[in-house]
Each structure stands twice: as structure tokens, then as C-alpha cells.
Image 1: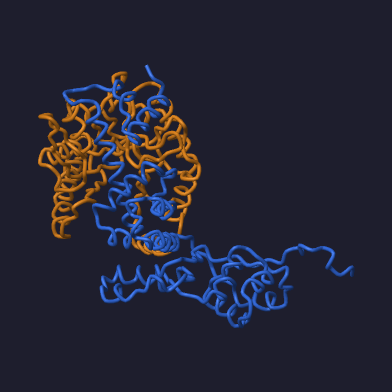
Image 2: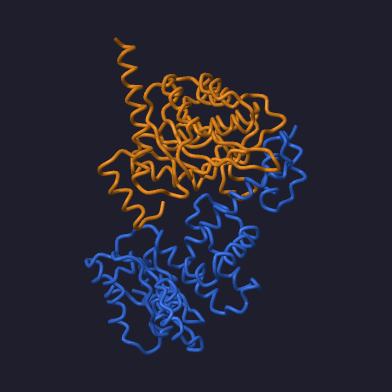
Length: 265
Length: 246
């Protein structure tokens, strides 16, 4: 008699990999061959997770069609099954999977669209957080930029993509064939900011310098480092815009990384 | 727990209605234990909405660190009973709320099972103080699939522990000449299930009832018709209760 642990590992293996031999002898036949009974569970497993991916990647689904999507989803589910019951956050690796998935190789922009949709999905489900209150602005303005760090809103993602995935994403979801055919795939990389505000999800295109600044700040670099990354842009104006948009929810003044620079007084 | 629009809607609904919190992901029957991060999320939601009822399934969904996204059947053994009871205790103390355990629909039975499912549920309720969510459609589906007696199943449950009833439609499928009923929540409640529901109400009294319909969703009018049919059966059960009292 198997222990519960052994039984669950056998069935899990059968569902994930179709290797039913180990599990099949555990249950009563009742007129059905064992692997048919396991298939009912395997089908529910695949259908449920495919539907979760379809909800998170609607533009990828439309771009490749239902049949292709289901096939790709099945390969992905078998390779990277979920590790958590929180299925809203299932599919973090789908974009990278598509980049390696040879049947999709001709759609060079597909992984970028998937990266964008994942950022949108994360923004939709991210925790709520109150933006920095205006009372903090003085302390921020007076802080040493080399010691000032900011905490980004949980919904914020910065993306640098090779293809104009934002234009493709908008055109596909709006079913706008004219906009889709006008897209120039060779236009060069695009620098995106994805966030959730009071109106919903926003996907904004930034200049490279603006992106480098916001990206460094949201990754936890100091204000001084973020400024260095960005080069010559109007930093105070840009930063005021981020604060007004509620993109930062906390700040701290850290001990300087270079103690020798600190004044002895 | 996440935020944004879904949480906002939940808060708005909670302002006007009581909420029944129905879980599918706790995997109460996992030999490897309950995912602490998931239990924490459920606790946060429960603390936020202060639900009237909280329920989960008599099943498992996780093994080897993989979440299988389905309600998988347990062997009905003393070992499984002990594990489920330990996890029900863990959940009830984590969220500070009694939970109801729902019978699943199953498509296979284990050779080494020794306890009928209704006795297993009865034992979990007796040992942990949890209640039972009796899914009448699942009782019917499993009874048909495994040759159990559905009426005997219902009569075997402790009436005072049943705190909620579920109804749903199911699909009838053929596999090499063998009929199997699949719980798909995709059609009207079967007539045989309505008859079993009437039986359940006679046994358990007018227990809060939910109709599950989440695939092939019909027009609102059809849903309202189904709900009205359940409501009139509940109304009759309430009348019968008064008659008994008199």
C-alpha cells in the first residue's frame, strides 16, 4: 500500500508527463482503462492553465490563433508548471519560453508582446500603495542625491523591447488592421513604462534617457546614480512628473556608500 | 492578496452583501503540507471581507512543489484522514474561522481506500469541528461514476454539520462504451440532482444554497430561473421546519 506522499507523487508525474504506469495500478478499473481516468484529470489541468494563460496573454493569443496558442501553452505548462495556487501570477516565464519555442521563431516580435502583456498582468494584480504625500517633498528635495533612494509603486514595470510591442499590442486588441500594417518592425528598440493608475493600466513610451532614469530609480539605485544613467535631461521636471503620477510610494536616506566622503563633523 | 480593480470590487460588494469565501487552492489533502504563503493570502482576504462562510474541498492539488490546478481525489484511508484533519485544524486556527469542507466529484477510486467518502467527511467534521459543504451534484456524479447509493450518502452525513449546499450542471460522457459523468458547471441542474436536493433539504433543513455555473455561461434569465427553483425548494423546506416546530 503506497503512502499518501508516494501516491501523490505518482499521480503528479502521470498528470505532468503522461507517464501513467506507476499511478495506474493504484486505482479500480471499473470498465475504463486507468490512463483514460487519469486523462480526465490531465485534461482539466491543461485546460484550466491554458485558460489562465489566455486571460493573461490575449494579444499573443490573437496573434497566433487558438490552435497554436493551445499547443504552445501545453508545452509551456509541461515545462514550467505552476508552483503556487495564485494563478493570476502564472506565466512569468511564458515570454522567454516563446523566445525559445522554435515553431514561433518566424514571429520575431512575439516574445516582446508577451513581455509587455506580462507587465500589464502584473500591474493589474499588484498590491495597492499610497503615493508619496506632498509633505515628504521638502525632505526629498533637501536630501543628498547620493544617499536618496525611492520605493516604486508595486504596479510599476520598466521594459526595454527590441520591437514596437506596445503598438502591436494596442492594434491587436483593438482589432485595428490598418494600425497593425503600419507598424515598422525595424524602427529600433522601444522604452516602456507600465503602471496602474486610478484610470487603469497605462503603457507609456519614454525616451531612452527618461527610461534609464526611471528604471534606475525603480530598481533601487540612488538618485545620483539614476541621474548619471540618464545623461543630460531636465531631471527635476522629470522627477516631479513621476511624483505627481504617484509612481513612488516611499523614500529613505541611506548611509553613503563612500564613508571617506562624509564630513568629520 | 494583490490589489487594483478586483480587490476594489470585492470591497464594494462587501459593503452591501455578506460574502461566502470559497477556496480551491489550499490543497487540504497534500501529504507535503499546506503552502504557507497561500494560507497567508487566504487569511488576509478573510480578515478584509469578514466572510459569513469559508469553505474548501476534500481534495489535494499540490505535490513535489507543483500546483496541479485541479481538485484531485484522495484515497479514503486513515492516513489521509489524519493529514486532512491536521490541515483543517491549521487553516481554522490561521484564519480564526470555522470552515466547511466540500465533497468533490471524482472520476477514479483507489484500490486501498477503506472508508466510504461520507464517513470520511463525517470523521473530519467530528475531529476538527469543521462543517460540511454538501455539493449535491458532486454526490450524484460520484455515486453514478462509482456505483454508490446517493441517498445513503446524504443520510450518512451529520445533518447538524451541513452548513451550505452546492448545485450545478454536469456533462455525461462516453469512454469506450463506459458512461462517466463530469462535473463541468456548464448546464442546468440535472432533474435527478433536483430530486436529490429535495432529499438533502428534508435531511439538513433550509441550508444556504449556491448554484455554480462557470462554463458555457447562459443568459441572466436562465440563471435567475435556476436560482428561483432552488429558492422555492428552500421556501418549502422552511415551511416544513415551521410545521415540525408546531
